[in-house]
Image 1 (tube, rainbow over the protein chains, first blue to last red):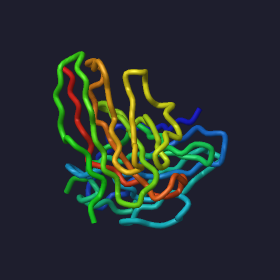
Image 2 (cartoon, chains in turn purple, brown; image 1 turned 60 degrees about the horizontal axis):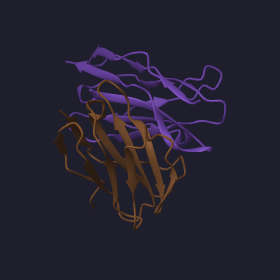
Image 3 (cartoon, rainbow over the protein chains, first blue to last red; image 1 turned 180 degrees about the vertical axis):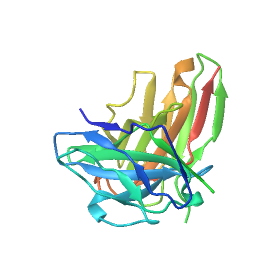
Image 4 (cartoon, chains in turn brown, purple; image 1 turned 90 degrees about the vertical axis):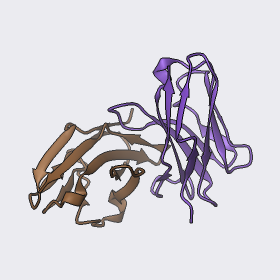
Length: 109
Length: 115
């Protein structure tokens, strides 16, 4: 079965500090990994996906198949990064997203 | 261009009643998904439509839950004999096609409260 684990419910940092939101997954096939973000009073939206290998709003995430991880990183956090972040998994054999429980990032001035 | 629209935004119903939740996807998106998000949890998959047909309904918790998409656009999630445990935010998402690496666009959700 597919599973996504986000061990931290809350991550609190100061502005300018580095951020790493952890995500581990369980899936025996070739995974598609995503990070979705939900800002206050806004809808859930895609932040980035591993297949694009892109950096969005300064965030990057590298798929590590050996460690089955897809951690989200940003070198210098901004207050506007405060939001709920969800890691999600999909795969060629199933047309749906499996989400983790989410991590709330709080960036203080 | 409008995004995914869900109505109502909030619904309070009594235990045992029947409810319908509506989702209007982005025009031209053939894939439509329903998810349920309980407090403190991530969204959990309920059902996936490709066009008019339910391609995967493995996430529906029991036979009180049913969803339709008769014309391949608007979808309705129907819950019979509601229970307090059904209280959650119900999210709808659509994507251009069902491929896993295409972006899913989410609606604002319907918050269902069963009292």
